[in-house]
Length: 149
Image (cartoon, rainbow, N blue to C red):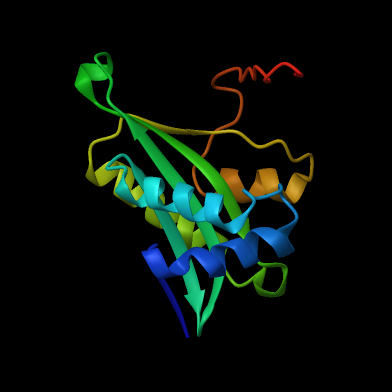
């Protein structure tokens, strides 16, 4: 049985395992640093981490970051990040469920829109997002990368 909910303090190890097996990006190391970042994340009133839990496994997650905005009649911006599903749980609707919960939350706190970017070239990934209501091509995304040290 699966449950979609906001992440809690004790979810850190499950999230780190999900990040490790999903091979999306390296997660923060050492563990003490990851714990510090997790504490900061949970303490931030503009950051919401959603998880889909199946039994004791964190099977999918995404993070909604909101920011106040003087434009758009004062309605916040939302940014969706860190969307992933454990390879063993893909195709069960869990990724869709966490994103749908994040979007529902964004609308409930009066976000004007939710922006997201994907660096993946797989057409299935893009189909996933368009099926959830994201529209490609409305904006142009730019990325500034940190210069090498």
